[in-house]
Length: 178
Image (cartoon, rainbow, N blue to C red; front, side):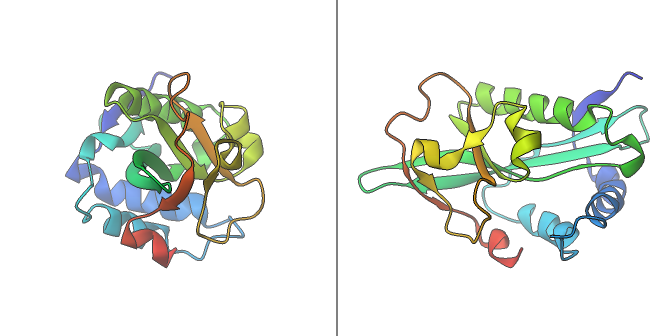
C-alpha cells in the first residue's frame, strides 16, 4: 500500500496520541509517559513542526509518527546542534511493514536539507544499526542519561559531519521526565 509522509497537522494529534500509546504499551522499558512527553516537546522553544511527521495510507488515517528535536552537543571548546529522534512509533497492526524505516528516512532527509549534521537516538541497536546508526561513543558523543550500553546511537547525515564534534548531549527539559 502506498503511504504519504506529511508534516503533522493539529487534526492528526488525537490519532497520534492513540498510536503512540498503543505502540509503546508492550515495550517493557516504557512507563507510559510517551504521549505526555510528545505534548511537552511541542511546547518547547525549539519545536519545529516540519520535524514532526506522520505516515498515512489515506487522508484520514495515521499509521506512523516521528519527531526530531534539536539538542546540543557541548564540547570543551564548542557547541553543535544536532537532532534527537524521540519518539518514533508505528501502529501495531502496521509494524513490520517498513513504515518506521520510511518515516525515519523522510525525517533524515528533512534534517539534512535543514543543515543538521546528525540524528541521535536512544533505541534498539539492531533496528537502528540496520539504518546506518552507530554507537555515539564512536564520535566521542556521550549521553548524560542512564542508557544501556550500545543503545545511544547516532547517524551522521553527511560524510565528516561529526568530525571534531565530540562532547556531552544536552536535552531540552521534557527529556528529563522520560
